[in-house]
Amino acid sequence: MKGKNFANKLYPVSKTDNDISNVEQYREYLFNSQQEMIFVMDMEENITNVNKTALDFMGYEEKELLGKHIGIIFAPEFREKSVKIGPRKVLTGEIPLNLPLYVISKKGEKTLINFNGSP
Image (cartoon, rainbow, N blue to C red; front, side):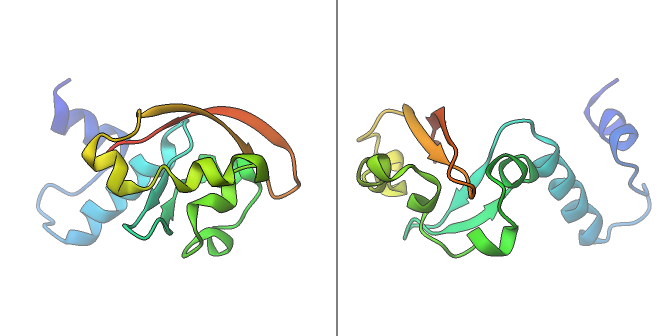
């Protein structure tokens, strides 16, 4: 199977329908079907999107995280370190893209993760 045919089998999209909503639905499907937690943040380090895996793992609802600083997901002792992760530093290569950090769920459970950043 090649790209387009494979994608249509995963999430059927009409070949004659050029509606942008189908593209957005497919993008959303791919984003939320990832088995890794994904947090998207803006240049002010506020969460602008989060996938289903992250919501389920962390115990939050999307509305509780959107617009909040990324530091909310890190254990208190790692928040200062997490603030230094900022998108500008990822873009300029000032920080490593893989950092071991503890996240804290809504219930207060700490889990060690490997934080991966990319521009």
